[in-house]
Length: 121
Image (cartoon, rainbow, N blue to C red):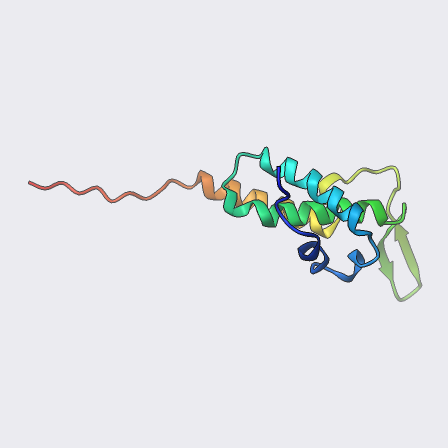
């Protein structure tokens, strides 16, 4: 099965992808392509979903185990994420965008289609 997006398109999402080797990005794209192809949604949305899912997978592999989730300036305070807490698809901004797109597509499918019924007498 051909990949549904390209390394170049994933790299356009942010500078954080520049340090990731092409072979690793290609692997994430292949994984994302398989996942998106199995969703049963219109092909017009496949590239964008694949791009964001591949970006999510790539970022998960490069992020530190603990990320700062909250900082306070006055009376300095820093809160870290729990490294044992699995946020899944919502763990990165790219995964969040992937999820948002899927939810928007699901909403579009729920809306009743408007029909124009004409009767000629």
